[in-house]
Amino acid sequence: MPKRNKVVSSTPDVVLIGAGIMSATLGVLLKELQPDLTIEIFERLDGAAAESSDAWNNAGTGHSAFCELNYTPELPDGTIETKKAIKIAESFEVSKQFWAYLIQQNFLQDAPDFIRAIPHMSFVWGDKNVEYLRKRYEALQKSHLFHGMQYSEDPTQLEKWIPLVMEGRQKDEKVAATRMDIGTDVNFGALTRAMFYRLYNMKGVKINFAHDVRDLWRSKSLGGWKVRVENVTTGHVRDVHTKFVFIGAGGGSLRLLEKSDIPESRGYGGFPVSGQWLKCTNRDIVERHAAKVYGKASVGAPPMSVPHLDTRMIGDKKELLFGPYAGFSTKFLKHGSYMDLPKSIQMANLAPMLMAGLHNIPLTKYLIEQVMQSPEDRLAALREYFPNAKMEDWDLEVAGQRVQVIKKDEEEGGVLEFGTEVVSAADGSIAALLGASPGASTAVSIMLELMGRCFKDQMVSEEWQAKLKQMIPSYGKSLAKDPALTDEIRRTTSEVLGLDVAVYTTD
Image (cartoon, rainbow, N blue to C red; front, side):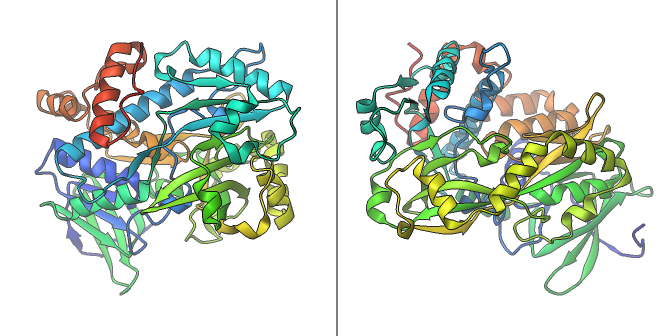
């Protein structure tokens, strides 16, 4: 139990832990909805978006399910499941609406060009995979959210779309690709930092960098929560009292959620997966590729390890990355501790973690193989997507750290979840976000879900409802069920965000 002799130094309405895209999104939403709300933010590093939200740490693709094949699994009967893809595509449109609103309000004037148009493509080879991609294309065409997708098995067409991928390939190899020209590349690092800069200048908001949250517990005397924070520069420790806590600390969220000791937290565990990129250093090659090209993951691979040849704009510079190559580390954060995983294991989650491990032996085997890879092995993987690749044109870069959610399951004992999950107390006074992909791209929808749980009365008030519909015109409506509304929203947001509006049509 923490000592109770610390003096409470501040009493904000809301405490946000972690300075990533989730805390930035929630902070801005709350201040827009209730300007007099006081917020204090704590980040253990010395800047915002330094972990998973940073562009170099894999938060760069505008996940909209256009090209990510893991969101459209093939079922045992041979049909393609599209529910998750449709949900993600719809959620990304919600995010774009919110960003467009912030630009219209001059809120994001400090983040120029954080989003750019770039084709999203899926590429496969071999008869079985080509058949799968064809069926996926046909299944997605039933949803207007994917209208405009092109499909081709013609090598001549593919050479025009992705010359690097096709050059040097066997002429008789069976290949296929889909292409969505309305795909985007999002620099979530730039977006997050711009949002925090504006929050910093708002009345009632205080941002504390280099401050580590050590503990938190319910305050019996004052109600709400006490949060114990250490200034990592000076060593000074203080307590903060608040009505609501959001734990958005990426891989660090699990340990803090466990410290809260809310019943809803019991049984959750985490499985960390590290990553690496190959970064192209040959500018001629970088300039010859202009797409995000995703393939199929290896058997047992986590979704974050789906291979892709990825064009990105980071700052004002075009970059070309391939990967990520998965690995294993007991750290929960890139700048974390090797004791993160051992310290997260408790009696409440030990059984689910063991059972999840037993059910995911192929994943363990895959990670071991990835860790043991040589430079030649990594080059061989790259050459599946870029046959003429040369080792001297690529440098190995360390990517971010992800923690996959492990949770109790009545039938399996424990299961490994490959998505994001909001865990909140019954009284709505605390919530945490666990998991990884497609997190950043769907941040707005995730935070709206969280607010629906934790700010129930405010969310149904006339004032908040009117403001939410101003910020997100489709709020309360289903884009997945309304082609005309989808078309209208895409045209409007594309114009505001500076994207190509000509291709946005549901005709």
